[in-house]
Amino acid sequence: MSSAPQIIPPHLISGRIGEPLPLPQDLEFGSTTPSSSSSTEAIPYTLEEPVSVTILRDLKAIGRKIKYVLVLNHSTSTTSEIANGGSNGSSLASELRDWDLWGPLVLCLALSVLLSWGVSTEQAGAVFALVFVSVWMGAAIVSINGQLLGGSVSFFQSLCVLGYCLCPLLITGLFSSFIHLSYVREIAVSVGVVWSTRAALLLIGSLVPEQRMLLANYPVVLFYVAMGWIVFLAAP
Image (cartoon, rainbow, N blue to C red; front, side, top):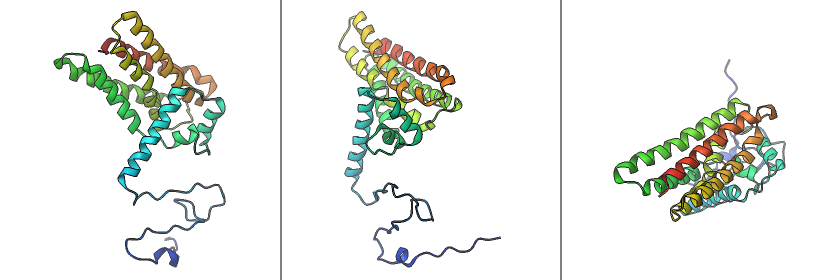
């Protein structure tokens, strides 16, 4: 049996061609029934904004996520907000709900270029491909593992966090490119691995059931230890 046809309100079909379509204030995005909550966030209309404004907004979002990784000031209440969706627009929970892969892609490309810079021309392509594939395959495996263990974040949120947590290793690689003392580089890479691992565990490790915590944390630690070893060996 076919459903009854929906009647479009007159105020939605009035107006001139080329003008943005008005949305009723009492409807949630993607819903045909009035909203019962007064806390529904306003959805910005971005189709007509300049490209420069869009790029600037995305760059600011990337900068905020990198700051969260570098500062390491997350608490249990913050991670519980991530699991519940979060409502504070300036919180880490809100940032992770609006996940992106641009930042991880830029960090991955920067790390790949940095580590392939100091090798011969014949090996540069192989090193670049090794680092690039290792980052994305490792992050994907860790994210799938978290999902199978009942993690509270989505696959792409986990992939976003793991990618942004490469930032300390990138800083370590840049530092190691200017320092050629082996023991200093070992210390620097160790600090970068601990920094990246702790940031990832604070954001992801606490969002899985407690009885499966070890199974979720072990691949994260192994991922960043492997990436740190690559940085130590391939840094120019």
